[in-house]
Structure formats: structure tokens, C-alpha cells
Image (cartoon, rainbow, N blue to C red):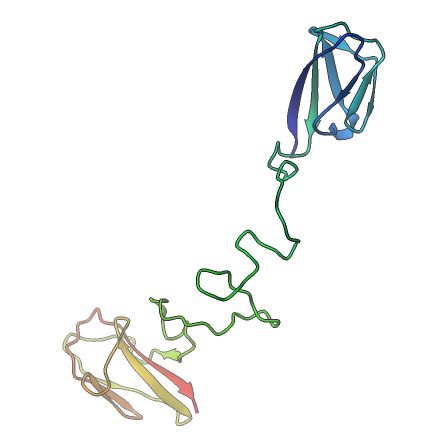
Length: 195
């Protein structure tokens, strides 16, 4: 991305050399002295040398294209210590209010996730949703399941909320009996993992 730069100078008597803030892209530069175009100059990097000396208070205008964002390219930023491995958040990781640094294998370190909410059992790796209950009728409490013998049932969910096995349901290898009311809009999910 390119940006137009405009730099104005007031000349001192006999001045011929001007140093621009940035080097013009491809050496393309427009020079004006007191509103008149000037083409007799030499440009080397950011230094412009005019062939004819200027008079006191001559107004010079340099217009050129630069590939840098003005001041945002970092060239005006000073007093920053560190190197490419240092961040503005510091160089300490995996603590309270600090950045998280992955392990050498690219995984997140073991951290306390007690503030993470709203994840499903599948997202947490706690089982695979087993949806052998495609529809629920109003008031239905008994459902037939066909769990292969190598699977272990983890949890039963009703509308995303985990049910209590001590009070809310009874589960066997081939059936689920709910001890809570149901409606036709309920979603019942049984999660399981293999032994």
C-alpha cells in the first residue's frame, strides 16, 4: 500500500540540499519552488540536491509516494527494549493475567479452566453424543437404547443440562428410564466412551 507524502521547507539563502523523512518509492519525486515545478535535481535515497541555489525564504514542496504508513511503520517508536521474542504484554507466560504459551508440541498447557462455561460434553472430550432417541413424545419416560457392549455410558442430558443419575434417570444396557417430565420438544442425549 502506498501513501502520498508532502513535505514543505523554507529555504535559507543559497540552500540546495534537503533531507526528506522517507525515501520516495522508485525515486519518483515532484519538486516545487514557490509554486513552480523544478526538474533539475538529484535524488539519492532521502536526500534531494537542487542544481540551482535558492533564495532566503523560498518555499519548497516535495511530493512523493511512500510504501510506509506515516509513523505507524514503527520508525518513530523509541524506548522499546527487548527482541523479537518479547511482547508488549511482557515475557512471562501462563500465569494470572498473562499470555498463554503453547508447549513444544503446539498444545495449550494444563491450566485451571473453572471459568470456562457453555461447552458441550463432545467439546470437552467427555464422550460422543449417542442420539438413538430421535424423537420424544409428550410424557414419554422410557426409551430403548442399543449400546454396543464395548461402550461405557458417561452422562444423560436433557436439553443440554446434565441429569442426576441418582434421581433423574435409570440406565441399563438397552433402555433409559427418565424420572423427569418430558415434552415433544425435548432433546435427550446419552454420551458414551469405549472401554
